[in-house]
Length: 244
Image 1 (cartoon, rainbow, N blue to C red):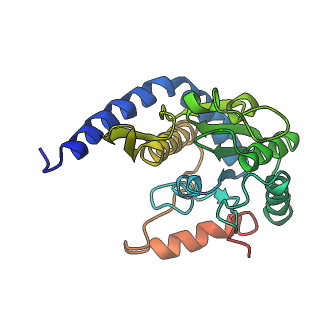
Image 2: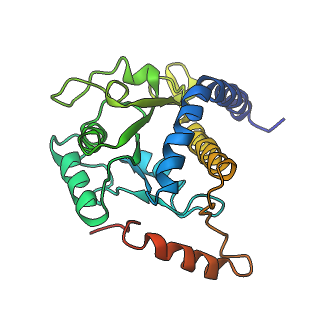
């Protein structure tokens, strides 16, 4: 027991949501593993995008020790401040496509807790036009109720081919600290876990189907840096860096 009753309440509820989200998303994770696995086995990469705070979740599986090397991010140099400027997300997608390529048969994971903001919706729409499988990581409770600001009228869950639900509540925070005021968000904690569950499912598919495992090694372990440099050469034109 901690010294904080609020922290205890948040911890208990978060664990319940984590277990429930794993169960709810099990079918989608199982369906996505071979889709992403086949793409990677054919030399493709996995793309991620998150605007604002959601970019932290997108970065969780990029260059991650113990994760897949062929994962690249579509980054917003404005850190989400323009995410509701119509057309901005399309330009971000076009720039990423120009530099690193969005190729048919690949997959992009678009992360938006609310599912209503213009940039993630436009990135998802652009990727679909390019022939990618689009995965939306969102709070289904919010994406199905919050009115989108995009003129197309659809929220992220209605555009995505597959949806991963973080089971977040409206406003994200789950712990009431004073009447009507809440703290303790869950979208990052659960979102990152769902992505790591997906990465493990993809790795299992690759292993069981006899494909090499393009794993990132920890550079703090002997030989890790050398292994990563050699492996990264295969993807040197596909892995993004932040473009100013």
